[in-house]
Length: 221
Image (tube, rainbow, N blue to C red; front, side, top):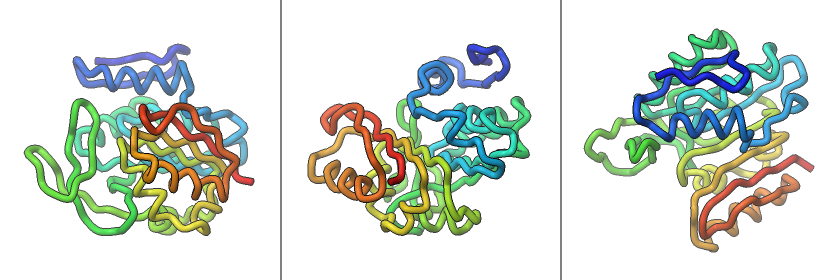
């Protein structure tokens, strides 16, 4: 199935009968839930890091803001990767977007990625249909790809956001100018420390609650 963006300039291949694929396109291209603005990527050589790139809706959107920006699309789930690469090629941004097929968490190592209800989740144990994945930390990801400073970091990883931030030291977070993070529901003793750490680096806004999930937006002080 092919979904067109509202301006008709970009096309996305989606899985038939997958409302989550269409939702991520709508959330990015219509609602702009991650609050990505042209000014975030205005500089030549600006870097956008997309952790949880899924089928590529956000990566293509970021690339469309500035053809001279660099986008790092991080996606470990094999089926998502297939659609991600296909959508980058269809929209002719493959030379601008670098695909990194790893998971990001608190510690480097290896794990399993399992598809669940149109999304994917990182686990410590093998499940039916899961795939083995390499895991890196946020600092390791930035270092490996030569990102001295990320102009924008987007994280949407179905609950793994808590581990990513927990494993990132303040020096790593200071390398990020702006952040948009989708968070899943979590107990206060998990949600609170994440927000407290982010607030040391960013002026933050929370949309939602730990009981039902939502978004955190931040701009570096």
